[in-house]
Amino acid sequence: MSELQRLKGLLPPENQSWVFIEAAAAIDPPLITLEEIGRDEVEIQVDLEQWDYLAQDHRNLLFWHEVGRIQNDTIPRDGWEMAALAIGLGGAIGELWVQDGLLLLMALGLSGFAGYRLYLKNNSEKRLQDAISADERAIDLACRFGYSVPNAYKSLGGALKDLVEKSRKKKKRTFYEDRLEALRKSAEKARAEMASQEGSKKSVTSENVYG
Image 1 (cartoon, rainbow, N blue to C red):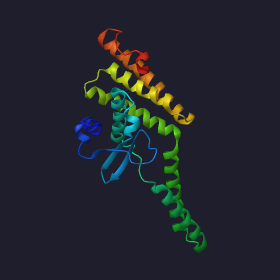
Image 2 (tube, rainbow, N blue to C red):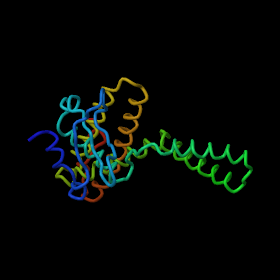
Image 3 (cartoon, rainbow, N blue to C red):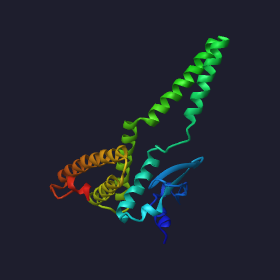
Image 4 (tube, rainbow, N blue to C red):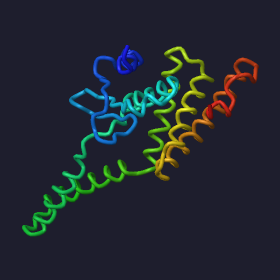
C-alpha cells in the first residue's frame, strides 16, 4: 500500500467522498498543506520526500491536523479580498468624481469589508488559534482511530517538536513552539480530567507531549 493510499484510509467516513490526497507537485513545497480545488472539494497535498523522514505516528497526527482544519472550516481560499479591495477603492475614487453619495458608501463598504477580511487572514493570533483548534481536532480523530489519549498527545507533541527542530525561520519555529505549549496545557487539563474520572494519576502527563 502506498503512503497516499494509507493516508486515504485515515480519513473519517464523512470526509472520504470530497477530500483527496495527492503528492505535492510545487517546487520546494510545504510538508503538508490544503488547497480548495473545486466546489465542496479539498485536496491535502503532501511532500513525500520530507514526509518519509517522519515517524508514522507523527505523520498520522499531522495529517489529522489538516483534516481538523477542514472540519473547522479554516481552509485557505482564493484571495478574492484583494480583488474586492481594488474594485471598492476604484469605485470610491470614481464616485468621488461623479459625486454619487450612495454608490460611494457602497464602494467604501466593499473596501472596508475586504480590508477586514485581509486583516483576519493575515492576523498571526487568529492563525495560531485556528491551528490550536485543529490540533484539538487531531487528538479527537486519533482517538477515533484507536489511539489512547496519552499516545495521541505524545504523537502530536513529537511531531510538533520535529517541526520546531527542522524550521529554519524564526517566525515559523515560534509558531510551532506556541502550538506545542498550547498542547502541553491541553494535556495537563486532560490528565486532570482523567485522573478525576478514574481516581488515578496515571493518565496523561505534561511530559507526554514532548515525545
